[in-house]
Amino acid sequence: MHRKTILQAKEDLLQKKYSAVELTKAIYQRIESVEPKVQAYVHLTQDIALNQAQEADQKLAAGQDAPLLGIPIALKDLICMQDTRTTCSSKMLDQFIAPYDATVVSRLKKAGAVILGKTNMDEFAMGSSTENSWHHPTMNPWDLSRVPGGSSGGSAAAVAAQECLAALGSDTGGSIRQPANFCGVTGLKPTYGRVSRFGLVAFASSLDQIGPMTKTVADSALLMNVIAGNDPQDSTSADVKLPNFMNSLERNLSGLKMGIPKEYFTSGIDPEVEASVQEAIKTLESFGMKKVEISLPHLQYSVATYYIIACAEASANLSRYDGVRYGYRSKNSDNLLEMYMNTRQEGFGEEVKRRIMLGTFVLSSGYYDAYYLKGQKVRTLIKQDFENAFEQCDVIIAPNSPITAFKLGERVNDPIKMYLSDIYTISANLAGIPGISIPCGISKTNEMPIGIQLMSKHFDEESLIAVGHQFQLNTEHHLKQPPL
Amino acid sequence: MSDKIDIQKIAKLARLKLTEIESDKLDGYLQQVVDYIDQLNQLDTSNVQPTSHVLPVHNVFRDDKGSKSKNVDYLTGAPSNNKGHYEVPKII
Image (tube, rainbow over all chains, first blue to last red; front, side, top):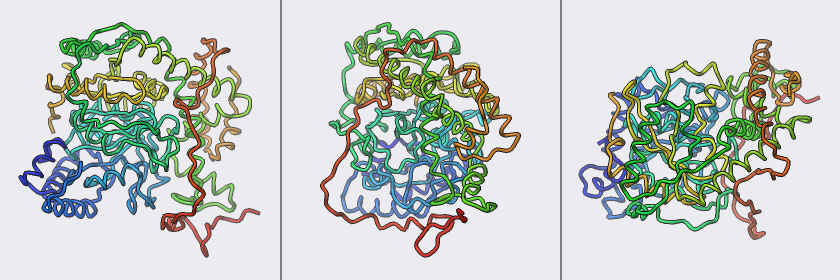
C-alpha cells in the first residue's frame, strides 16, 4: 500500500480495496521499518492521523468524497499545525506548540487528508543538505552515506522512501526542487503568491513559497488544487484566477516552445547530469515541442544576489526569537538585554547565526546601498532576463542541480560551496516564477537520481504540469525506487 | 569593499552574544562571503530600479467591522508568564 501514488490510493479507497485506517497503519509500519536508516521525520502525529483516517472512512462509507479523503501526507516542520510541535529543526523552537493551523493545513484537513507527522529540514530552512538540523541529519534513501538535499530534505526523503504518499515542502532558493532532484521525486515550487504563507514560519518573506513533493506530476497537480488560492490572512497571496490544475494533464504539447538557457550548460555541471538533461530535451522534442536557444545572462550573479536579499530578510524575520513570547529562553541572564543575547546565542545553530550576521551587515548603516540596494537592483536584472526569455519561449528547460547528491559532511564546512549547489534554482525565487523538478535519469557512476527543471511565467504552473505529466507518461525515471 | 568588518558591532545589532571562537569563525565567513558578493560591482546598475517584491503588492483592506478573534491563549507558549502578561528579567 505504501508504494501507491495519491491518485492510485484515492481510487483504491473509493473501491474499498482497503480503508483509510489500513492505509495509514501500513504507512506507519513502513515508517517503523525504514526510519532508523533514513530519519526523515522529526515527530509523528499518530493519534491525530488515526482519528483523521477514521473520519475519512466514515465519510467514504457514507458515500462522500473530497480531493484527499484518507490520503496520508507529511508536513515540513516549519508549517504550523494546531496543538502540535513546529520546531523548524531548531533548538529555539524545540518545545513550540503551534496555536493555530497554517492555511495550507486547514485546506488539507478540509480536503480530508491524514497528517502523518512533521519532516526534518535545515534549521529555519537555511541549508541545502538537511545537515543543519538541530535534531539529526536525514539520509538519502538511495545511498545512506549521502545527503537528501535541503532544506526540505526530510519531505523529499520521506516521499522517496515511501514513508508518506506525498509531502509539503517550502522553497526559498531551491529547497523543494533540489532535494526532490537528489531523492528522485517530483517537487513543485509554485509562483510567489500562489499558495498562502499564513502559518509558514518565515525565512525570507519575498522568496518563500510552499509547494508539493510527490511521486508524480499528476499528484502535484491534485495537491495544488487543494493548497493554492488567495488567502485574506496573507496579504502577499495573489488574488488571481485559480485553474483546475488537473485539466492540464491532458494538454497537447505540439508547437509549445521550450527555451534552453545556454548559461546553464557551462562549466561546473557534471557531464552525466548534462547528458541526462539533453536526453530529456530530446524526449520533449518527440512531443512536438520546439527548441529555442535563450540567454539568462545574469545567472552567475544570482547566488550573490540571493544571499544578500534572503539573509537581509531573515535577519529581520528572526529578530522575533528573543525568548519573550515563545520558544527557548536562556536561564542565565540578569537583565533583559543579556537575556536576548544569551537566548539567541544558545538557541540558534551555526548556519543561522552566519545568515543573521550577514543579513544584519548588509542592512547596517554605511553598507545598505553598497549591498542591500545593489542586490535589489541586480534582482531586477535577473527578473528582466526571464521576462525577455519568455518572449521567445513558453517553458524553460534546464538542469536542476549541477551535481547529484553529495556525501554527508562533504560541504558542510564550506558555506560558499554549499550555496553554489543551488545556483540553478535560486533565480526562479528571485524572479518569483514557478519551477518544477522531475526525475530524468540515474547516474551510472554513483547510482543517484538526476533531475530536470522546468520553469514558466508567473502563474503558469499549468504548463509545467502539462509538460511534466507527458514526460512521465512516456518515461519511467519517476518509477524507479531506492534500494531500501 | 575591503574595509574590515566590525564583527562586534554587527553582533550587537543582531542581538547575538558570540564566544571568541564564534567571533573569529564568523569574521572569516563574513569576509569570504562579502568578497564573493562583491562580484555584483561588475554590473552597472545606476539606471536600474530596485525590486523589493516581484509582484505588485497592494494593501488588503476589510470592512471596519468587529469579528470574533481566534480563541487562542498565546501566553501558554511563553517561556514565562504572570497574571496574563509575558514576564521578562528586570529591565532597569
